[in-house]
Image (tube, rainbow, N blue to C red; front, side):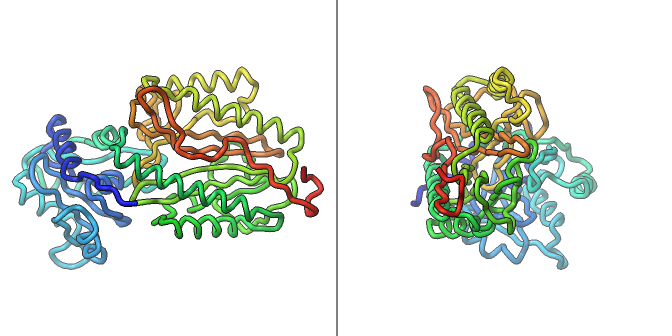
Length: 401
């Protein structure tokens, strides 16, 4: 699937946001900003220099400059390295001077977040820029790209559907190979192979690529990070499968669950809590509602049902293109770079709705599904069921149905 994204229009629209914010030139170091404005897969420490008027310049390591000059939508791509004249900060300063903006307002991207590869400017880089441009004003402009990427372009939504479909297909392949004795790493390998065959470019998550957990590894208290290990799946265990693919820079992320054999009564209690919470989150995600309202309503529902000790009190994170994987989360309380409880969701916004429901010693389950806000409600892009799969283990498992 190919789809045309109008990058000149996107860049022009963002430059208008810079003008409104009083920023003459942005030193964009965040992964989110670089991906959005270049249209390239940029895995290295890089910078995109964005004037409010004029040509953008992408500054990347010299070892990757040739590829990115070919693959991005930008004509101006330069390489930096540990050689005279092409130092990273020297090139940024040179470009700002070429634009004649050394005494203007320079935007930077500073902040904090749970998401490790965010790419905020470092203290060293900031101090160096201030030293090189003593006559300039500096303004934190990190919020601009956050807001700019909340509502997706129609073409991005189309690509998100495809990214989700290839992850769904990998889940179905995993279901067909799930058995007693298979290891978590083997499950991850089946999933990764399937998604690559379907066109995935990258197992993009920094929490282990494909996250797989079985048995006790599913039920840590509020635990939601499970890189695959050598542990093998056993009779009666829950299996959590959280898969990640990337299609034309758009991120596919779907987490689903299985039980190896007939659930015990205690496991059934946790399944009921998990499924009930999942449907409540989806029900609450309606156009015009704030993320804080959604979190408050779901948390009240969970407490009323008596599931408060099992369910993590946060219900989703942001999703989109490479680098846009965390902000904004669905929580009641504001948290810089993480939660945005006052944001009222709009048509075209995509939320990665999530539920973590774990009862230590019994079972743990995780939902992640991309949910598109529409004019009249919402649409879950994944076609997998909410309810966990019940896997018939046959003779290998005395608990099989």
